[in-house]
Length: 265
View 1 (spheres, rainbow, N blue to C red):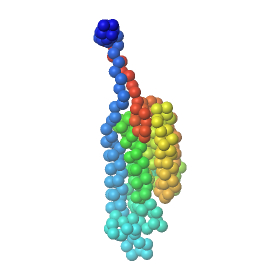
View 2 (view 1 turned 30 degrees about the horizontal axis):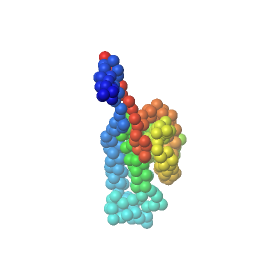
View 3 (view 1 turned 60 degrees about the vertical axis):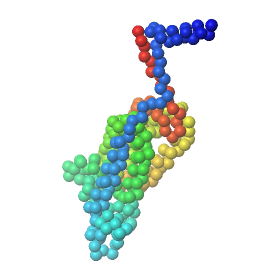
View 4 (view 1 turned 180 degrees about the horizontal axis):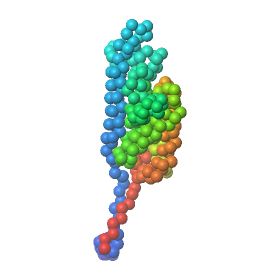
């Protein structure tokens, strides 16, 4: 009898409009990732076009130097002494929009600051960048949406190109490393901001460190520069702290719990 009164009393209090009702969500909304996959497809497509334009057999016809992977026809790679990354020649990269200080400053070709983001020096370069972009970019886009991630990718790449043009004035440079490291800086700051909710902190941190190390190593190879890489990583690390306040579930993180209060009067 007493327990029945208690249950009825609890029900009545729950229906009382003077008390707020709470709804607890055990998981945050996940965005559908589509922009990062499009970036990946675009980068790979551009690389294929560059290799088509390069046409190594025709370029090296009658030369003692032989193309690599001749069975690919006009898509075969330049000799390894010229390009150890299994890619096109420097002349082709320059023709397709590689970053070159003299042409940007004195030739009024500012568009190279953008086009160089979509070019890669070779197969090794494009694979390292795209695998890292898939692993990092998709996670960020699912959590923060395509607008924020897309802006960071594009602005980071453009800013990295500007810095590269200031420090590299005698050689050409290409690559999406600036844009990629903008996302890596964002991911690292998100990791540190929401450090307490990670169930496997060391694994998450080591994964990022490995990706950063691999891309820095690629940066010492021909036509790939680390000025854009370092700059965008450091530049975007601090500002992203403002965006990384909302945690997501990845790499063994504990599910986030949020409370939503609605008051009925």
